[in-house]
Length: 182
Image (cartoon, rainbow, N blue to C red):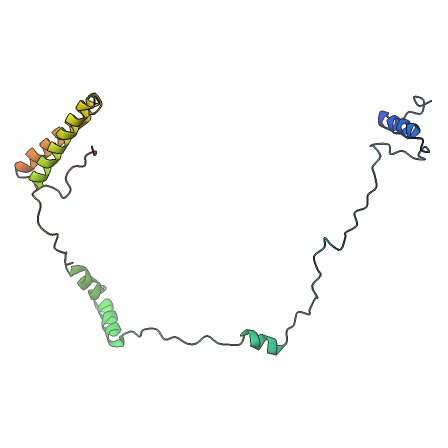
Protein backbone atom coordinates (compact mmCIF):
# COMPACT_ATOMS: atom_id res chain seq x y z
CA UNK A 1 0.00 0.00 0.00
CA UNK A 2 2.90 2.39 0.71
CA UNK A 3 4.41 1.76 -2.71
CA UNK A 4 1.11 2.57 -4.38
CA UNK A 5 0.73 5.84 -2.46
CA UNK A 6 3.75 7.35 -4.28
CA UNK A 7 5.40 8.59 -1.09
CA UNK A 8 9.08 9.46 -1.04
CA UNK A 9 11.49 7.31 0.89
CA UNK A 10 11.77 9.99 3.50
CA UNK A 11 8.00 10.15 3.96
CA UNK A 12 7.78 6.35 4.12
CA UNK A 13 10.49 6.26 6.79
CA UNK A 14 8.67 8.92 8.79
CA UNK A 15 5.42 6.93 8.70
CA UNK A 16 7.21 3.69 9.70
CA UNK A 17 8.88 5.43 12.65
CA UNK A 18 5.53 6.82 13.76
CA UNK A 19 3.93 3.35 13.62
CA UNK A 20 6.80 1.77 15.59
CA UNK A 21 6.42 4.35 18.33
CA UNK A 22 2.70 3.78 18.44
CA UNK A 23 1.82 7.37 17.69
CA UNK A 24 -1.17 8.29 15.52
CA UNK A 25 -0.38 8.78 11.84
CA UNK A 26 0.09 12.38 10.71
CA UNK A 27 -2.66 13.86 8.59
CA UNK A 28 -0.16 15.63 6.31
CA UNK A 29 3.47 14.91 5.45
CA UNK A 30 5.95 17.49 4.34
CA UNK A 31 6.47 16.45 0.69
CA UNK A 32 10.01 17.78 0.16
CA UNK A 33 11.92 17.40 3.39
CA UNK A 34 12.06 15.62 6.66
CA UNK A 35 9.68 16.72 9.39
CA UNK A 36 10.99 19.68 11.25
CA UNK A 37 10.47 20.26 14.85
CA UNK A 38 8.78 23.52 15.44
CA UNK A 39 10.77 25.30 18.04
CA UNK A 40 9.81 28.90 18.14
CA UNK A 41 12.65 30.98 19.46
CA UNK A 42 11.25 33.36 21.95
CA UNK A 43 13.68 35.91 23.21
CA UNK A 44 14.20 35.73 26.90
CA UNK A 45 14.55 38.86 28.92
CA UNK A 46 17.85 37.70 30.44
CA UNK A 47 19.61 37.76 27.03
CA UNK A 48 18.32 41.13 25.82
CA UNK A 49 20.23 44.29 26.63
CA UNK A 50 18.38 46.81 28.74
CA UNK A 51 16.37 49.26 26.69
CA UNK A 52 17.55 52.80 27.16
CA UNK A 53 15.01 55.47 27.60
CA UNK A 54 14.61 57.39 24.40
CA UNK A 55 14.79 61.17 24.54
CA UNK A 56 13.78 63.72 22.04
CA UNK A 57 16.50 65.16 19.79
CA UNK A 58 16.52 68.50 21.58
CA UNK A 59 18.54 69.22 24.69
CA UNK A 60 17.83 72.05 27.05
CA UNK A 61 20.09 75.12 26.82
CA UNK A 62 21.29 74.69 30.39
CA UNK A 63 22.63 71.23 29.57
CA UNK A 64 24.48 72.55 26.49
CA UNK A 65 26.00 75.40 28.49
CA UNK A 66 27.03 72.99 31.25
CA UNK A 67 28.83 70.80 28.69
CA UNK A 68 30.79 73.80 27.43
CA UNK A 69 29.30 73.92 23.94
CA UNK A 70 29.03 77.72 24.04
CA UNK A 71 32.51 78.42 25.43
CA UNK A 72 34.94 80.04 23.00
CA UNK A 73 38.57 79.05 22.75
CA UNK A 74 40.91 81.63 24.16
CA UNK A 75 42.82 83.64 21.56
CA UNK A 76 46.50 82.79 21.59
CA UNK A 77 48.49 85.39 19.64
CA UNK A 78 51.29 84.14 17.45
CA UNK A 79 54.66 85.76 17.02
CA UNK A 80 54.26 88.92 14.98
CA UNK A 81 56.27 89.54 11.83
CA UNK A 82 58.52 92.53 11.40
CA UNK A 83 56.47 94.55 8.92
CA UNK A 84 59.37 96.78 7.78
CA UNK A 85 61.52 93.74 7.09
CA UNK A 86 58.64 92.10 5.20
CA UNK A 87 58.13 95.27 3.10
CA UNK A 88 61.83 95.38 2.15
CA UNK A 89 61.78 91.72 1.22
CA UNK A 90 58.73 92.17 -1.04
CA UNK A 91 60.25 95.29 -2.65
CA UNK A 92 63.38 93.30 -3.47
CA UNK A 93 61.31 90.47 -4.94
CA UNK A 94 59.36 92.88 -7.17
CA UNK A 95 62.49 94.82 -8.19
CA UNK A 96 64.86 91.92 -8.89
CA UNK A 97 62.56 88.93 -9.11
CA UNK A 98 64.60 87.14 -6.46
CA UNK A 99 64.63 87.06 -2.70
CA UNK A 100 67.96 88.52 -1.52
CA UNK A 101 67.63 87.11 1.97
CA UNK A 102 67.48 83.58 0.61
CA UNK A 103 70.76 84.18 -1.23
CA UNK A 104 72.34 85.59 1.91
CA UNK A 105 71.34 82.52 3.87
CA UNK A 106 72.79 80.21 1.24
CA UNK A 107 76.07 82.14 1.07
CA UNK A 108 76.65 81.98 4.82
CA UNK A 109 79.40 79.42 5.47
CA UNK A 110 78.58 76.68 7.90
CA UNK A 111 81.05 76.46 10.74
CA UNK A 112 82.36 72.96 11.23
CA UNK A 113 83.31 71.58 14.57
CA UNK A 114 86.93 70.75 15.21
CA UNK A 115 87.29 67.11 14.12
CA UNK A 116 90.06 66.58 16.65
CA UNK A 117 93.58 65.37 15.93
CA UNK A 118 94.12 64.38 12.29
CA UNK A 119 94.76 60.68 11.82
CA UNK A 120 97.36 59.84 9.22
CA UNK A 121 95.46 57.91 6.54
CA UNK A 122 98.55 55.97 5.44
CA UNK A 123 99.16 54.70 8.98
CA UNK A 124 95.51 53.72 9.17
CA UNK A 125 95.81 51.70 5.94
CA UNK A 126 98.96 49.95 7.17
CA UNK A 127 97.13 49.05 10.38
CA UNK A 128 94.16 47.63 8.42
CA UNK A 129 96.48 45.49 6.29
CA UNK A 130 98.23 44.23 9.41
CA UNK A 131 94.87 43.37 11.02
CA UNK A 132 93.85 41.39 7.93
CA UNK A 133 97.12 39.44 7.94
CA UNK A 134 96.76 38.65 11.65
CA UNK A 135 93.19 37.47 11.10
CA UNK A 136 94.31 35.22 8.23
CA UNK A 137 97.10 33.62 10.33
CA UNK A 138 94.64 33.05 13.18
CA UNK A 139 92.18 31.34 10.81
CA UNK A 140 94.96 29.18 9.33
CA UNK A 141 95.89 28.10 12.86
CA UNK A 142 92.26 27.03 13.39
CA UNK A 143 92.12 25.22 10.06
CA UNK A 144 89.80 27.77 8.45
CA UNK A 145 92.48 29.58 6.40
CA UNK A 146 91.41 28.09 3.08
CA UNK A 147 87.95 29.59 3.47
CA UNK A 148 89.17 33.16 4.15
CA UNK A 149 92.47 33.30 2.19
CA UNK A 150 91.04 34.56 -1.14
CA UNK A 151 88.83 37.18 0.49
CA UNK A 152 91.53 38.59 2.78
CA UNK A 153 94.21 38.68 0.06
CA UNK A 154 91.79 40.49 -2.28
CA UNK A 155 91.03 43.09 0.39
CA UNK A 156 94.73 43.58 1.13
CA UNK A 157 95.51 44.10 -2.56
CA UNK A 158 92.68 46.65 -2.86
CA UNK A 159 94.00 48.62 0.11
CA UNK A 160 97.57 48.50 -1.24
CA UNK A 161 96.40 49.70 -4.67
CA UNK A 162 94.52 52.59 -3.08
CA UNK A 163 97.58 53.49 -0.99
CA UNK A 164 99.79 53.51 -4.12
CA UNK A 165 97.27 55.70 -5.94
CA UNK A 166 97.13 58.19 -3.07
CA UNK A 167 100.92 58.16 -2.81
CA UNK A 168 101.15 59.44 -6.42
CA UNK A 169 99.32 62.66 -5.61
CA UNK A 170 95.75 61.49 -5.19
CA UNK A 171 93.87 62.77 -2.18
CA UNK A 172 92.45 60.08 0.12
CA UNK A 173 88.72 60.31 0.68
CA UNK A 174 87.47 60.35 4.22
CA UNK A 175 86.71 56.80 5.27
CA UNK A 176 88.66 55.17 2.42
CA UNK A 177 87.60 51.97 0.66
CA UNK A 178 84.99 49.77 2.31
CA UNK A 179 86.16 46.34 3.39
CA UNK A 180 84.43 43.38 4.97
CA UNK A 181 85.23 42.98 8.63
CA UNK A 182 87.31 40.04 9.97
